Structures are given as structure tokens and as C-alpha cells.
Length: 248
Image 1 (cartoon, rainbow, N blue to C red):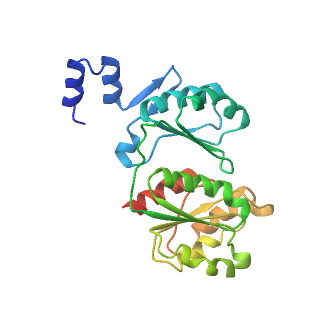
Image 2 (cartoon, rainbow, N blue to C red):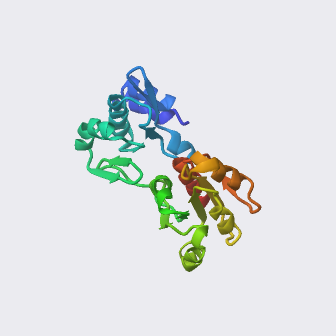
Image 3 (spheres, rainbow, N blue to C red):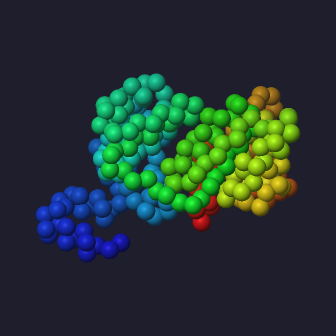
């Protein structure tokens, strides 16, 4: 990090000592319970995201308020109704509020926010309609990292002709995410057809012996094609990895 511009801003009174400290440390403190990483996107292109799941709604709102003030945009994932209500005051301070209901994601932006722009393209496929919420988390993440995203849903192996009919939509993508539950076969099929990196995203859909996505995860890990695999329901991770690869 180049410290000289920061020190010059402090000496000229344009930056307080506390603000300079935050820039140097690379995170902002939220009371005594959170530290929002303000330099993650500068380091590796992946934005810091607020995971609402497991947090108190009031704490999520506090983190989001600090994040949008520092970064002009905040992405909050896995939001329940109570947390959505707690975010109302934060929403009122944003110029733009995007609510992706299927994925339970909210993106807040100020009027000063300038989105990243890349030439990367990411395709997101699902085996079934039940896989869409996790796939949407991946799609939103890749879009927020500046990629053009094409979604092709409900093209699983139970009716493989559906996927072949849509091949023109993903054949030229720079990276492809394939979300599937049950036995998780679709990523293997797609990876055997294209020359782009494919990321398998196992989804916790399906009952019986392979419940909670375990069969899908193991099936993708055992794939005979060249395939990367993320954890079960890890839509954010899949989207971020795909965007990094597509922009590469």
C-alpha cells in the first residue's frame, strides 16, 4: 500500500486520523462485534459480503449501514423476514435497493457507486427448479463482480434433451456454474462438452440416502471429467470463483 497519499490527506485535513487508520488496516470496525473488510475487493476482486444467516437482525443492519457508508454498496445474503425488516432504515439511505427474492439477497447501492466492468461471461445452469435459489446466489455474485451472466434453469439429466437445446446459451461462456441436487450428474455432462472451466455446485435437494446434498457433492467429486467443485449450497463461493476465472 502507498501510504504517502493517506498521510498527505491527513496533513491537509481531508482525512481524520481514525479514517487514515481504517484505510491502512483495511477494515472498518462495527461496534465491538464485527470488522468489515473494506479492501477485499481491491485485493482479489471479490467483494466483502454480509452473511445474515446466524446473525442477529440488528447486528446485520449495523454492519450493512457501515459497509454502505464506506463502500457505496453492500451485498447481504440469506436474509429472513426479521432481518429484512431490520434493514428498512438502511434501505432508506440507499439510492438503489435490489431484492432478489429467490436467493434471499439484498444489494444496496448509493448514487456514487460505480460498478466494476469486465469482459467476462458466466453461465449458470441448474438441474431442476428447486436448485434455483442457490444458483441465483451464484449469479448475483458474478454480476456484482462485473461479469455478464446467462442463466439456464431446469435442464437436468432426467430430460437431457433440454440441456442440448439450450447449449447455444452457454457454449461461449468463459466459465460455467452447474448447480444440481439429487445425484449431481449434470456438471459432469456439461464439463464433457465445453472447453471452459466448469464449477460444480452441489445443492441440498433430494431425499433418501443422498439427502442434504451429500450424494451430489460426492458425485461431483468423483466426476470423470475435469471439474471444480465447491461445498454444498455454496452459491457465493461458486459465483466468486467463476467471476475470477471469467475475468482472468
